[in-house]
Amino acid sequence: MRAQCAALWLAAVCALVAGPVCAQDGWTLEPAARIEFQAVSAQSTTRDEDLVVEGEALSVRGQASLGLESKRTRVRVEADRIEVFRLGKGRADVSRDRLTAAIEHDLTRSFELQAQLRRYDDLVTVEAADTDAWEYSARATFEPTRANRFRLQGTWRERQYDSVAAPPTTGEGERIDAQYRRRFGAYHYLAFDLRSEAIRSDDPRRGYERESAGVAYTRPVAKDLRLRPAVEVIRTRFDGRIADNGALRRDRQTVPELELQWWPGPWRIEAEAKYIFFSSNEAAREREGYRLTLSVGRVF
Image (tube, rainbow, N blue to C red):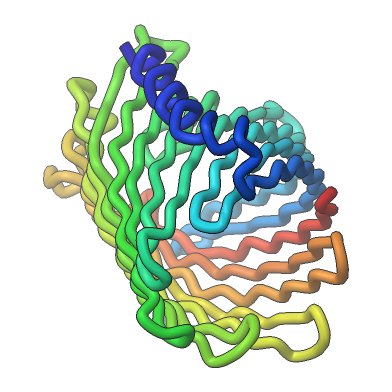
Protein backbone atom coordinates (compact mmCIF):
# COMPACT_ATOMS: atom_id res chain seq x y z
CA MET A 1 0.00 0.00 0.00
CA ARG A 2 2.83 2.42 0.86
CA ALA A 3 4.54 1.74 -2.47
CA GLN A 4 1.28 2.40 -4.33
CA CYS A 5 0.80 5.71 -2.51
CA ALA A 6 4.38 6.70 -3.34
CA ALA A 7 3.90 5.81 -7.01
CA LEU A 8 0.67 7.83 -7.20
CA TRP A 9 2.32 10.81 -5.51
CA LEU A 10 5.25 10.77 -7.94
CA ALA A 11 2.90 10.32 -10.89
CA ALA A 12 0.98 13.41 -9.81
CA VAL A 13 4.21 15.40 -9.65
CA CYS A 14 5.24 14.23 -13.12
CA ALA A 15 1.82 15.06 -14.52
CA LEU A 16 1.97 18.52 -13.03
CA VAL A 17 5.28 19.40 -14.68
CA ALA A 18 5.21 17.32 -17.86
CA GLY A 19 3.27 19.85 -19.88
CA PRO A 20 5.41 22.88 -19.05
CA VAL A 21 8.63 20.90 -19.47
CA CYS A 22 7.65 19.61 -22.91
CA ALA A 23 6.63 23.11 -23.93
CA GLN A 24 9.93 24.54 -22.66
CA ASP A 25 7.88 27.28 -21.04
CA GLY A 26 10.56 28.84 -18.87
CA TRP A 27 11.60 25.62 -17.09
CA THR A 28 15.23 24.83 -16.27
CA LEU A 29 16.80 21.50 -15.39
CA GLU A 30 19.32 21.54 -12.53
CA PRO A 31 21.24 18.34 -11.70
CA ALA A 32 23.44 18.51 -8.60
CA ALA A 33 25.60 16.29 -6.42
CA ARG A 34 27.28 16.53 -3.03
CA ILE A 35 29.85 14.50 -1.14
CA GLU A 36 30.60 15.03 2.55
CA PHE A 37 33.05 13.56 5.03
CA GLN A 38 32.42 13.81 8.76
CA ALA A 39 34.31 13.00 11.97
CA VAL A 40 32.52 12.73 15.33
CA SER A 41 33.93 12.47 18.86
CA ALA A 42 31.58 12.11 21.84
CA GLN A 43 31.80 11.33 25.55
CA SER A 44 29.15 11.08 28.25
CA THR A 45 29.24 10.23 31.97
CA THR A 46 26.57 9.14 34.40
CA ARG A 47 25.65 11.50 37.23
CA ASP A 48 27.91 9.69 39.73
CA GLU A 49 30.66 9.42 37.07
CA ASP A 50 30.64 5.64 37.59
CA LEU A 51 30.28 5.02 33.86
CA VAL A 52 32.06 6.83 31.04
CA VAL A 53 30.90 6.18 27.48
CA GLU A 54 33.13 7.30 24.60
CA GLY A 55 32.43 7.12 20.90
CA GLU A 56 34.25 8.14 17.74
CA ALA A 57 33.09 7.66 14.18
CA LEU A 58 33.89 8.59 10.61
CA SER A 59 31.20 8.87 7.95
CA VAL A 60 30.83 9.63 4.26
CA ARG A 61 27.65 10.91 2.65
CA GLY A 62 26.85 11.02 -1.04
CA GLN A 63 23.87 12.83 -2.54
CA ALA A 64 22.58 13.15 -6.09
CA SER A 65 19.62 15.33 -7.02
CA LEU A 66 17.67 16.53 -10.00
CA GLY A 67 15.61 19.70 -10.01
CA LEU A 68 13.12 21.34 -12.35
CA GLU A 69 12.39 25.03 -11.82
CA SER A 70 10.08 27.60 -13.33
CA LYS A 71 9.29 31.10 -12.15
CA ARG A 72 6.85 29.89 -9.48
CA THR A 73 7.32 26.11 -9.15
CA ARG A 74 10.24 23.93 -8.09
CA VAL A 75 10.38 20.11 -8.24
CA ARG A 76 13.29 18.12 -6.82
CA VAL A 77 14.19 14.44 -6.43
CA GLU A 78 17.14 13.47 -4.18
CA ALA A 79 18.91 10.26 -3.23
CA ASP A 80 21.25 10.10 -0.20
CA ARG A 81 23.43 7.38 1.25
CA ILE A 82 25.45 7.62 4.47
CA GLU A 83 28.09 5.12 5.54
CA VAL A 84 29.17 5.35 9.19
CA PHE A 85 32.39 3.68 10.33
CA ARG A 86 32.38 3.40 14.12
CA LEU A 87 35.79 3.38 15.75
CA GLY A 88 36.47 1.24 18.77
CA LYS A 89 36.21 -2.43 19.62
CA GLY A 90 32.82 -4.10 19.32
CA ARG A 91 31.07 -1.20 17.52
CA ALA A 92 29.39 -2.20 14.27
CA ASP A 93 29.36 0.04 11.20
CA VAL A 94 25.98 1.31 9.98
CA SER A 95 24.51 2.81 6.80
CA ARG A 96 21.39 4.76 5.90
CA ASP A 97 19.54 5.42 2.64
CA ARG A 98 17.08 8.25 1.97
CA LEU A 99 14.96 9.11 -1.07
CA THR A 100 13.14 12.45 -1.29
CA ALA A 101 10.67 13.90 -3.79
CA ALA A 102 9.32 17.41 -3.23
CA ILE A 103 7.38 20.10 -5.04
CA GLU A 104 7.17 23.78 -4.03
CA HIS A 105 4.83 26.36 -5.52
CA ASP A 106 4.58 30.11 -4.92
CA LEU A 107 0.90 30.95 -4.65
CA THR A 108 1.77 34.62 -4.21
CA ARG A 109 4.97 36.60 -3.70
CA SER A 110 4.68 36.01 0.06
CA PHE A 111 2.99 32.58 0.35
CA GLU A 112 4.56 29.23 -0.61
CA LEU A 113 3.29 25.64 -0.36
CA GLN A 114 5.39 22.46 -0.37
CA ALA A 115 4.50 18.75 -0.56
CA GLN A 116 7.18 16.17 0.17
CA LEU A 117 7.59 12.41 0.25
CA ARG A 118 10.51 10.64 1.94
CA ARG A 119 11.62 7.04 2.30
CA TYR A 120 14.24 5.98 4.86
CA ASP A 121 16.05 2.66 5.22
CA ASP A 122 17.94 1.78 8.42
CA LEU A 123 17.22 5.05 10.20
CA VAL A 124 18.09 5.59 13.88
CA THR A 125 15.00 7.02 15.63
CA VAL A 126 13.92 8.00 19.14
CA GLU A 127 12.37 4.60 19.77
CA ALA A 128 14.60 2.18 17.83
CA ALA A 129 18.08 1.79 16.39
CA ASP A 130 16.98 0.21 13.10
CA THR A 131 13.92 1.77 11.47
CA ASP A 132 12.50 1.86 7.95
CA ALA A 133 10.08 4.72 7.37
CA TRP A 134 7.79 6.57 4.99
CA GLU A 135 7.11 10.26 5.62
CA TYR A 136 4.45 12.42 3.93
CA SER A 137 4.56 16.13 4.69
CA ALA A 138 2.94 19.42 3.71
CA ARG A 139 4.45 22.82 4.51
CA ALA A 140 3.22 26.40 4.29
CA THR A 141 5.58 29.40 4.35
CA PHE A 142 4.38 32.97 4.80
CA GLU A 143 6.93 35.76 4.30
CA PRO A 144 5.08 39.09 4.40
CA THR A 145 8.38 41.00 4.38
CA ARG A 146 12.00 40.05 3.70
CA ALA A 147 12.67 40.35 7.43
CA ASN A 148 9.91 38.05 8.73
CA ARG A 149 9.16 34.45 7.82
CA PHE A 150 6.57 32.10 9.37
CA ARG A 151 6.58 28.39 8.58
CA LEU A 152 4.23 25.54 9.56
CA GLN A 153 4.74 21.89 8.56
CA GLY A 154 2.75 18.73 9.23
CA THR A 155 4.22 15.25 8.69
CA TRP A 156 2.67 11.80 8.86
CA ARG A 157 5.14 8.97 9.56
CA GLU A 158 4.83 5.21 9.07
CA ARG A 159 7.61 3.09 10.56
CA GLN A 160 8.74 -0.52 10.65
CA TYR A 161 11.21 -1.68 13.30
CA ASP A 162 13.70 -4.51 12.83
CA SER A 163 14.83 -6.48 15.87
CA VAL A 164 17.09 -9.52 16.14
CA ALA A 165 15.23 -10.79 19.21
CA ALA A 166 11.64 -10.37 17.94
CA PRO A 167 9.57 -10.18 14.74
CA PRO A 168 9.39 -6.74 13.06
CA THR A 169 6.80 -4.35 14.51
CA THR A 170 5.31 -1.10 13.24
CA GLY A 171 4.40 2.38 14.44
CA GLU A 172 2.83 5.52 13.05
CA GLY A 173 2.14 9.08 14.10
CA GLU A 174 2.24 12.76 13.33
CA ARG A 175 4.79 15.54 13.73
CA ILE A 176 4.04 19.26 13.74
CA ASP A 177 6.80 21.86 13.24
CA ALA A 178 6.44 25.63 13.58
CA GLN A 179 9.13 28.26 13.03
CA TYR A 180 9.48 32.00 13.09
CA ARG A 181 12.64 33.50 11.57
CA ARG A 182 13.74 37.12 11.83
CA ARG A 183 16.19 38.22 9.14
CA PHE A 184 18.58 41.09 9.89
CA GLY A 185 20.70 40.77 6.75
CA ALA A 186 22.48 38.29 4.49
CA TYR A 187 22.98 35.05 6.48
CA HIS A 188 22.05 36.95 9.66
CA TYR A 189 19.03 35.33 11.36
CA LEU A 190 17.29 34.66 14.64
CA ALA A 191 15.03 31.58 14.51
CA PHE A 192 12.56 30.11 17.01
CA ASP A 193 11.44 26.48 16.53
CA LEU A 194 8.67 24.44 18.15
CA ARG A 195 7.93 20.75 17.53
CA SER A 196 5.34 18.26 18.78
CA GLU A 197 5.38 14.62 17.70
CA ALA A 198 4.05 11.19 18.62
CA ILE A 199 4.39 7.58 17.54
CA ARG A 200 1.73 4.99 18.38
CA SER A 201 2.53 1.28 18.19
CA ASP A 202 1.21 -2.09 19.34
CA ASP A 203 4.76 -2.71 20.58
CA PRO A 204 4.86 -1.06 24.05
CA ARG A 205 8.57 -0.28 23.67
CA ARG A 206 8.01 1.98 20.65
CA GLY A 207 5.25 4.46 21.47
CA TYR A 208 6.23 7.93 22.67
CA GLU A 209 5.27 11.60 22.75
CA ARG A 210 7.81 14.41 22.46
CA GLU A 211 7.88 18.20 22.52
CA SER A 212 10.86 20.44 21.84
CA ALA A 213 11.65 24.13 21.68
CA GLY A 214 14.77 25.77 20.33
CA VAL A 215 16.31 29.08 19.42
CA ALA A 216 19.27 29.67 17.07
CA TYR A 217 21.15 32.80 16.06
CA THR A 218 23.23 32.88 12.86
CA ARG A 219 25.65 35.76 12.28
CA PRO A 220 28.28 36.34 9.58
CA VAL A 221 31.69 37.13 11.08
CA ALA A 222 33.77 37.26 7.86
CA LYS A 223 33.40 36.48 4.17
CA ASP A 224 31.77 33.03 3.81
CA LEU A 225 32.14 32.49 7.58
CA ARG A 226 29.20 32.32 10.00
CA LEU A 227 28.78 31.63 13.72
CA ARG A 228 25.65 29.88 14.99
CA PRO A 229 24.96 29.53 18.73
CA ALA A 230 21.77 27.62 19.61
CA VAL A 231 19.98 25.86 22.46
CA GLU A 232 17.22 23.23 22.43
CA VAL A 233 15.09 21.68 25.18
CA ILE A 234 13.45 18.28 24.51
CA ARG A 235 10.91 16.40 26.65
CA THR A 236 10.01 12.77 25.86
CA ARG A 237 7.32 10.51 27.38
CA PHE A 238 7.31 6.78 26.56
CA ASP A 239 4.03 4.87 26.51
CA GLY A 240 5.30 1.48 27.64
CA ARG A 241 8.73 1.85 29.25
CA ILE A 242 8.72 1.62 33.03
CA ALA A 243 11.21 3.62 35.14
CA ASP A 244 12.73 2.66 38.50
CA ASN A 245 9.88 4.21 40.50
CA GLY A 246 7.25 2.19 38.63
CA ALA A 247 6.03 5.16 36.57
CA LEU A 248 6.29 5.53 32.84
CA ARG A 249 9.67 6.77 31.71
CA ARG A 250 10.14 10.51 31.27
CA ASP A 251 13.29 12.04 29.71
CA ARG A 252 14.47 15.60 29.35
CA GLN A 253 17.40 16.95 27.33
CA THR A 254 18.93 20.41 27.29
CA VAL A 255 21.40 20.89 24.44
CA PRO A 256 23.40 24.11 24.01
CA GLU A 257 25.57 24.14 20.90
CA LEU A 258 27.94 26.32 18.91
CA GLU A 259 28.50 25.86 15.18
CA LEU A 260 31.00 27.48 12.83
CA GLN A 261 30.10 27.43 9.12
CA TRP A 262 32.65 28.23 6.41
CA TRP A 263 31.23 28.00 2.88
CA PRO A 264 33.88 29.18 0.38
CA GLY A 265 32.57 28.61 -3.13
CA PRO A 266 31.43 24.98 -3.59
CA TRP A 267 32.95 23.86 -0.27
CA ARG A 268 30.95 23.34 2.94
CA ILE A 269 33.12 23.15 6.08
CA GLU A 270 31.29 23.04 9.41
CA ALA A 271 32.49 22.51 12.99
CA GLU A 272 29.93 21.91 15.76
CA ALA A 273 30.26 21.53 19.53
CA LYS A 274 27.31 20.32 21.65
CA TYR A 275 26.98 19.68 25.36
CA ILE A 276 24.07 17.40 26.25
CA PHE A 277 22.39 17.40 29.67
CA PHE A 278 20.15 14.31 29.91
CA SER A 279 17.85 13.78 32.90
CA SER A 280 15.34 10.96 33.43
CA ASN A 281 13.24 9.24 36.10
CA GLU A 282 15.26 6.14 35.18
CA ALA A 283 18.47 6.78 37.11
CA ALA A 284 20.71 4.69 34.84
CA ARG A 285 19.95 7.01 31.92
CA GLU A 286 20.90 10.27 33.63
CA ARG A 287 24.10 11.56 32.11
CA GLU A 288 25.81 14.48 30.47
CA GLY A 289 28.58 14.89 27.93
CA TYR A 290 29.88 16.51 24.78
CA ARG A 291 29.67 15.80 21.06
CA LEU A 292 32.16 17.35 18.60
CA THR A 293 31.57 17.16 14.84
CA LEU A 294 33.69 18.28 11.87
CA SER A 295 32.20 18.08 8.36
CA VAL A 296 33.89 18.77 5.03
CA GLY A 297 31.71 18.67 1.93
CA ARG A 298 31.73 19.76 -1.70
CA VAL A 299 28.75 20.65 -3.87
CA PHE A 300 28.89 19.90 -7.60
